[in-house]
Length: 175
Picture 1 (cartoon, rainbow, N blue to C red):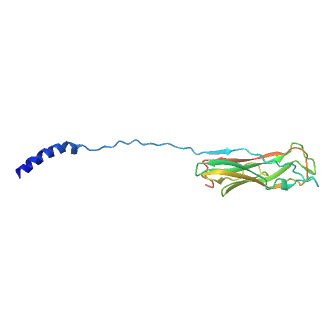
Picture 2 (picture 1 turned 45 degrees about the vertical axis):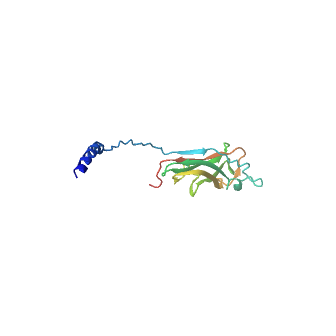
């Protein structure tokens, strides 16, 4: 038994320094951020209506406006992103005498996925905001409900207006 103890003692002495070592950790934290953004990949399109009056009576041909559409493409990376639409009247610079109209009113509706926002050109300013959240894709803008103020004859010349679709990355809708 003595031999066994003598032989074990040198082994225990050799192992002692290794057992005294303990592992320690150092940590490097890594962080970053991404700002809430919305962007248009295809920001501008044109709807060319052509002749907007009826040849038979000179009044607005609503079929030239209603149902016309164009597609913008965009994205938002924030869950609280919103979309608004601002429709401005189609107007002609010539003053309209009694019995004539120099303005076309309409409703513009923008749709992306299952979300839509709209505005009527009758009232200035943007329509109500709709939550779009995180999305990337097409935004189809469609015109509807075309009318003139007096159902009069259309003044000859060029008519101009526009629809502005605004994407805002950090707006809470209805809150």
